[in-house]
Image 1 (spheres, rainbow, N blue to C red):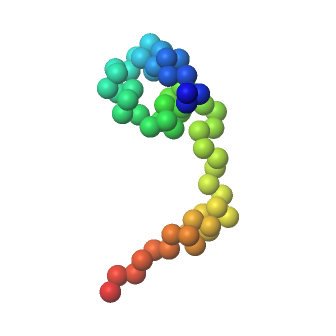
Image 2: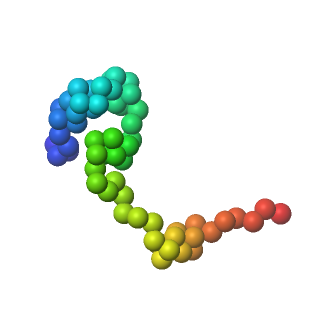
Length: 63
């Protein structure tokens, strides 16, 4: 059991938001969370976190 309330999420998406089944299943979990009014879908990107990501995934130079 995944612990995810699929029936509840589907009711919220299909009945509450008026989505079609196709629209519902095309959404990412974060998109659905935002559409359902989650206060904060993701923590804000701080300068420190941006620096961590830049170090972990540096831009590749061509040539």
